Image: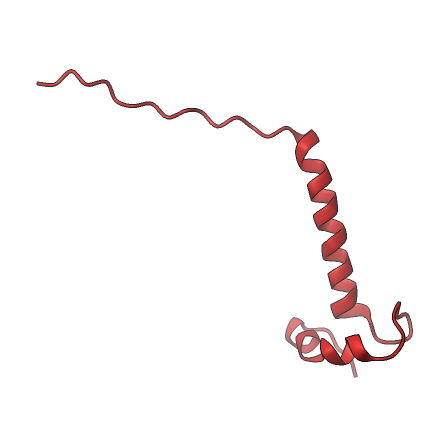
Length: 69
């Protein structure tokens, strides 16, 4: 018989909210900007002149369920 002691794993320490919050806010802002560019940019409220972004993302808009016509 062997008297080997089973190996123990180190416990994971929780990440403090203070470290996660700035990254969560940054990710939220980036996702909202992408949502605007893909879903809301129709020309009337566009931040960019012309319809380049609308035409570039046209098929993606339909794939995500945004009406555009």
